[in-house]
Length: 126
Image 1: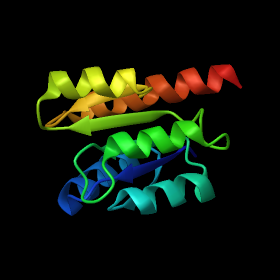
Image 2 (image 1 turned 90 degrees about the vertical axis):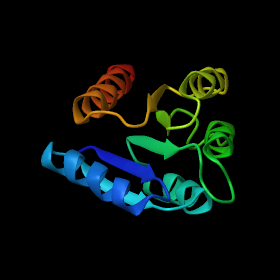
Image 3 (image 1 turned 60 degrees about the vertical axis):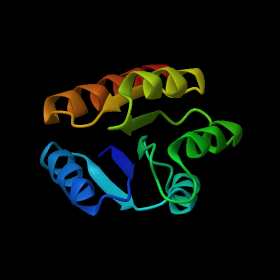
């Protein structure tokens, strides 16, 4: 079973994402800040990280930078998501090494397609 780590301080959205993913055969871990997200990425080695950009404290861009700088997690697919200025967020996310970007609100179909495409790509590399 593939494991997805969700890093978002919106608990309602975390539960919704968790429900969508669990219903579709994924194991899901959720944390509500960047520090916990980095720790979980290092310790649990999820197959993909889904991270909000707008977190209290360390934002999603910094989470992405640190994931990419750590040799143990550098190849972990990271999808950043945001509801604010989607186009600017997309450009910056991709320039920092994100594997994809989801603009909130997104559909369950978009979420599942994004994750499936990245995990499929990752699986092909190993």
